[in-house]
Image 1: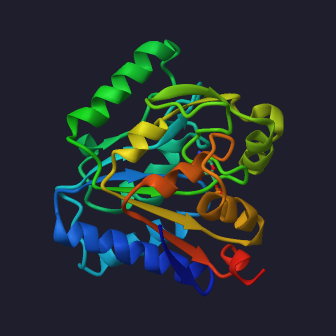
Image 2: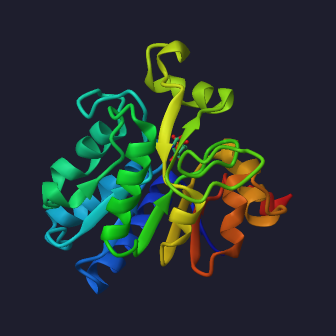
Length: 243
Ligand code: GLP
């Protein structure tokens, strides 16, 4: 894993956007795996700026998102589809038929997991997968558990994740309790993985991901085995180096 330390959140966002921009420039028809959460918001706004400046073209790009809450429709302002439309899709020239997320409204979880797995497969593989990191070390919505789950699956969110994500909802009771997510195997198929991490409250999780034992109890720790992972973390998140 390569660690790039950024000064602060803005610097992390610029560095991450530069890496994604390089991917788009070098391969204009790249398949990008995208993430939600507050961490990549700055990265997306940097990409939008580069597009507006005429430096990036998304017309041949395809995107597949990591995850989606089960039960939320794309119009729901807490859905990840809405998030992506708001922060990126509506602001760049990415064709609407080129972006994909799990369908949170499909209550047939088996059918939805199979459908989304095939969607990802039919794109021919992810070139660059952007990831954030949960406080408990989760990636996508792969929560700490006794095993690594390989494929797209439905997960029960942990109390810690519900607690962390309730800031976006009226109350913790409104946070969906389940989500569809790419599995660890799905994420691993990406040629390049770009993990963005910001803030002191993520330091412990990042330390475990990069330096701890590889364990499904810290799902992100499996990234130690991938041959091409770039971690862009701000100084606060990477402060374990100074301990
Ligand atoms: C959610 C998402 C993850 C994200 C995590 C951290 O649980 N499913 O993909 O990485 O939150 O979010 P944040 O960046 O807001 O801390």
